[in-house]
Image (cartoon, rainbow, N blue to C red; front, side):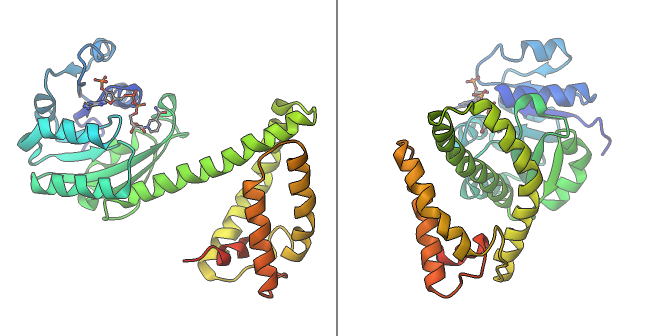
Length: 289
Ligand code: NAP
């Protein structure tokens, strides 16, 4: 497979358009289709072939990328494609659950296509740059055949032949971000209530996180895998001594204490179980499962 292999892109929303644009810029003959006509105009000016139907677009290339809003949309698009997908490699870059990815993999299999699922962890303008991270899983053979083309989109990692694994990675990355960021938003209420500039505080947090968090995350991941918990962030017995003040401070300013109460409860349980010398990562053992 040369790096200028033909590609079809189904779906020309923000992300689908960025994908098609990236392929075009890298010299891939690119065929595009979108449910609502007209969205391919600027891509056509840049050299893309615009098809009237999804089935016609699929017929144009061995590699077919679909990126639409959600899996309801994927199902609708693929229903229109039907048997035209036979013999092709279908790459689905629509976000969704592992179960939906596996179901789409079965659909592809039943229709004679190889299936690769993917999760895009990037904003559309970052597609094709080193700031884009894309998880892939599904047919290893198809991934290896089309790897140079797929790598045009960004840093690409293949997670295994279970089609759901790319989504597992995507969902876990997104969830990590949301869990962290909702806590950050609540804390910015506290910062603002105390008369501190939230933007300046955010800059300082960005700096301290850049230094401290990458090694901490690595330590925590290893501790959880091995079930051995070092005193990361200090021993729990010391950390727990701050929790009442931390919660009272937030409460006094009308800032949400839900997550801090959870942290304190888990620390208290862990210490009561005789593990006060372990670190923050050991709270994992209190989460169950
Ligand atoms: P978007 O700009 O809202 O575009 C949605 C696309 O889905 C359009 O092409 C739309 O077609 C199509 N669509 C919706 N319902 C459809 C249906 N029933 N049948 C056929 N086509 C349908 O969304 P996007 O930003 O491109 O996002 C696409 C995927 O990329 C999503 O799964 C999203 O989670 C993922 N993603 C996006 C970002 C981001 O920052 N944008 C980042 C990471 C991942 P019409 O033009 O006809 O409406």
